[in-house]
Image (tube, rainbow over all chains, first blue to last red; front, top):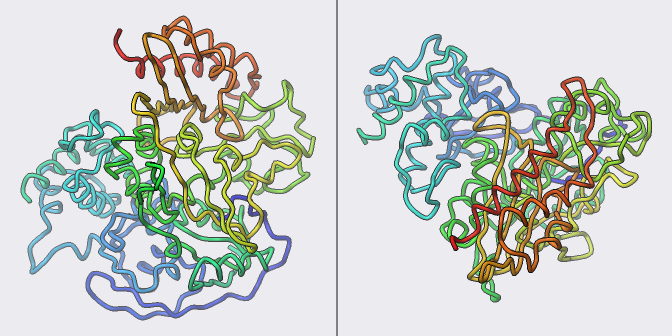
Length: 184
Length: 340
């Protein structure tokens, strides 16, 4: 990225289309998108996958979180055209063989949601959190950066801080994430 | 959003040539800042050139004992790198204090220091902003200044002047890289050049629209971290309005060496207080050779902040940043001082 870009004085161009392929929840999808389309809009508006939610659309709420090439990411800040060929898993595609993913089951067991709008993003983010913790990735609250972190309440809260819940279900989300971490 | 053509060059040479040839082109890496600016209308490019996968995504050991960080290494990967955690904790801590897990997985090392200010007036295309629209004035002066600068600005900035900008640089990573005396590998149409990290960002100095000294079309390909002396300790401390996922009000990156109770060397950089990572050169000078005590730390911090100008504002202004910066410098240096 160039740190010095300035707004262009030139007028509008015609819309530009691009052909891309996405692997979404295990299914190969070929589509033609306007280059301005975000991954979130491609998933929801073009592919009918309503699992990732559009909360703020500016990368501030986490409702659009998906697993992008295996890592949790914000689909609202990703251009679909920049992720041609990517493997995307949404909360809708986490269950395997009719069994809920351990994180999904833990959210139910711990009553970790109320209205549910942020929940698919919370669940994808939690899957990422557990994977990152298993690799030994530190967080801002990890006291010893050279050690391997334990998923204490403070660690889970910090690692999940990119997912806002306006119902305030955090008190149940934290133990749900810890329980899912213990079942795997 | 203005329509744009999307290009995916085969290598950095083609990418640099493509952007350099078109004043309406921008580089895209992780996209966490640029995609938002496309939506807001802050950036209106006609051509977006994807470089996310073109630079190195590895941290490699250099001949001098330091490390080279490829521009495509994500913020998460860099913060988790065992060598960074062990030898450059200031950098790991700075990265981990920024954004959220999802954003750190997307954001790249090359892009992070090039993110643009979060000044709300810069991001609002309906108000004047010399950074976004050169010559239009500065809506931040006299507005909400809680997140704005106190250093590197005039005592009473003129809102109508084309040169005024009181924005702060938002990157935590950049503050740490400045304290580590990193070097920047830059590829341009005429080849590769290396610049000290301290020379990457600039003060508003007559043209607030330019955040950096990079020319249009120049691309950061890597950062080099020189080795730190084995006795050096480093840390990053960030103060913000909520405990996580917020930009700094004030932050401090420090590298400290103490021998026999005396400060033998120190590097001190402040975030959240200026248009660029603010090297606290006066404080450093004040500290070298002095006893590593709270009194020395306070004297040095006060000397640095003597050059600060609090900005009045609708929310009570940002004068609180001066004592906050002094205390944050003191706390960081105390944390790094070995027990006597």
